[in-house]
Image 1 (cartoon, one colour):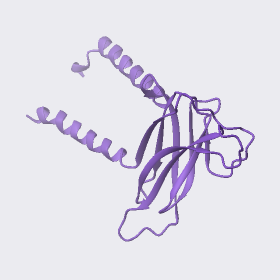
Image 2 (cartoon, rainbow, N blue to C red):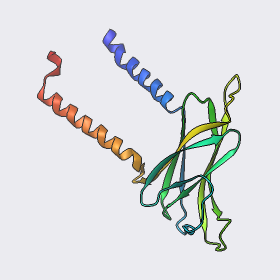
Image 3 (cartoon, helix red, strand yellow):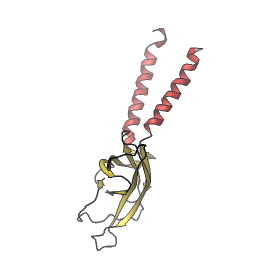
Image 4 (cartoon, rainbow, N blue to C red):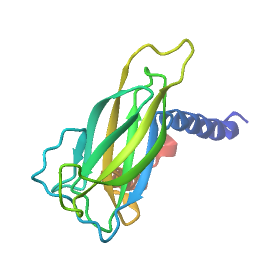
Length: 180
């Protein structure tokens, strides 16, 4: 009787832990238009930015002020590709990330109308009682290309899971684990 209830309880416990792990992450999936031309690299950047030049994933930490919209320029995106942006923060900072979006804007220092940049934006609002006193919160912003319907930063995780499953299967086939 005890063994019959062990597996469902274990699964419920794992699902509850999984739900807690998702609590401090927000995700945005966006596609770059196929006619997008990235702006000139010669222009100076005086705002937060994240570079995907010569790579397909990047991560950076930012100190984000509360109750204001925070924009991060994403450089090096390929036209026609789809990307996933993730916004993560620690559990010791009781905040909510809202108003998540992306936009294409003309570079203000450029005279060329084709000099466009892509921004991901979000708003961090306090969500606690008593009120949260800090003026900024550290937020990790990561952007990864999506290939074959999966973000490229998950490929290593899938390979690891597959290797563990193969190793477990091989060990199970060699040893009779039920006699131990």
